Image (cartoon, rainbow, N blue to C red; front, side, top):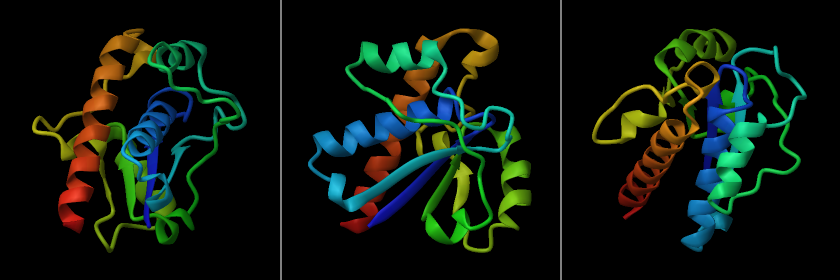
Length: 153
């Protein structure tokens, strides 16, 4: 089983979008039983809050639900639990590494590092451009799934 944890600053926009996009991709590929997918935050500021309404609306626009998801903070024990701990942007990495106690196995990366154009995922909290974030998240999740499938082949 491949275990993936998506991480952004607050766990109300980018990382839950990635969580539910990835769940949708693996479900449509008939691979749901082979994956465990979740998301978390570097910060505890949004702990317990639901997915931000515009992010929820963007997912719904593509037929993807996220009901029941609430923000939670990354925990040290997540390092042992997950195979991939994927940041939305470079600025998330120092906080992740501090919480996780390092990255001795090389599990911590940015989601879009798996794409052909590595970069940060656009932060809609500041840009209000949920379309750009959707494009980035979808590209990252598709690239990650292709990477995992080719590694297992």
